[in-house]
Image (tube, rainbow, N blue to C red; front, side):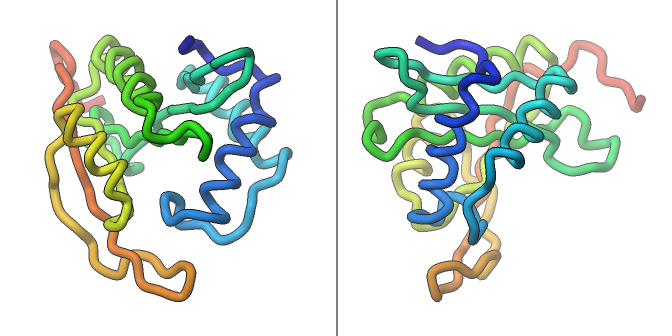
Length: 170
């Protein structure tokens, strides 16, 4: 089941996120986040009206997705970047694809034009999932990050959403 995250889900979200930090290059961060970090992140998303979607199976949260601004300047108001993470024991089961489908529907309803994915160059599973969803490759920043004793290439993908009916420069 996919649903909106609740404050009681933050421990499961934190576990999924920290596992990705400590064991993968999906997140270019070095240290695990704290419960205080994730609660502040959750509260900020809720206050901004930005959904955090979770995938629940057998009453356990095993994946989540959300979005945020792509860049801070106003002309980027119709472009957002997303995050999607799945518990290590449940990867490769289509959970990320289902979460993304739900998120893309919400973004279309809200009038966004472009959805950006920043994916580590070695994360073939994520790249294939995004391509299957209709994302197109937009370019690579070589040596964008350094983790686990090696340089990391960051690949960008984009998906064209419906966009706003009447875009403005507000």
